[in-house]
Image 1 (cartoon, rainbow, N blue to C red):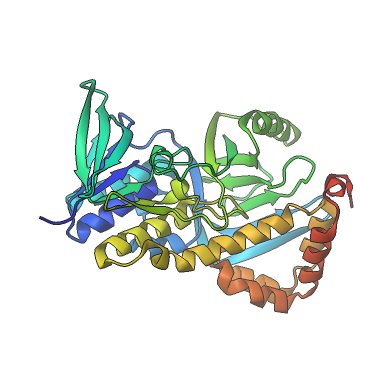
Image 2 (cartoon, rainbow, N blue to C red):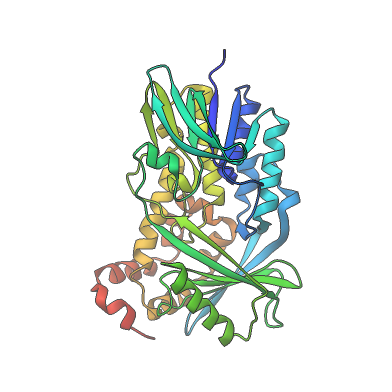
Length: 385
């Protein structure tokens, strides 16, 4: 009998892993505590890299294509025109598409089942899963366990791999304002409000998602409402999520009871800390886990390229967290033609390939970053242009 795989969590990473493993010929069963696939809905933006990672274009989930990104600080701005467009996706549609792909390859998806824990007996893992519809606990034996159950992963907790931080994402769906273009994302850097940024992502010629990243939901709510008021925007509905933060040195795998426990997506903190984007990186994590299982290789080895990318984003975020508003002004003022050309041809998911070219194109960015890192932390919020 072939080694079986059990996946906890119908996230995009979990469903994609189920699809790849079932296509590879393994028996796969995925459990999720939700009664239906998909909700809550959320507007996502991803780079073109998603097509390469998936091996297909997720056409059914695409709402819009973005050709330009406009970056704004207090006293500067810059516009980057993408050689290949970013894709605006609807999260629920993406999950349903991936679920259909997984089922089409023979994976079983069991909804309404809550993972409780596992025991190792030397011959594999025995999982305890509660069937919520029948109100009974089922015992499931598995050779491989993949935790794809989000930033508060019960699988990570059971494997003693929990403890990473999270940040809050909050966005409002609004009518596309007359000062915004349907093919252009706007990004505002406002160091006083958030160490990350605000954004406007057009969903179509009629609507957009406006949001920000903050340390907690209450703080995000207050600041987003103020931003909407300042820009004369009215929320149609709100979309919220907690996202894991990447941690240097974290090993998203353990061998327990003769079985392998692998974490993917938010459960593994596979998130770019520059933008807190985790869709493409989570899918890459799922592909690495599937390769490790199908090929019999080490998950850590399959993750090397992704880890380099995520570690680099972590270090860039560490620099940006020391930026004041004046530094963002300077950053955008220094965006010359050569550097802009690199940003236009390399996506946010290819920073490891682009960084040295960017620094060679604009070496003053290196000095700007070094000065920010050397600045006392208590001065960051007080500096203005």
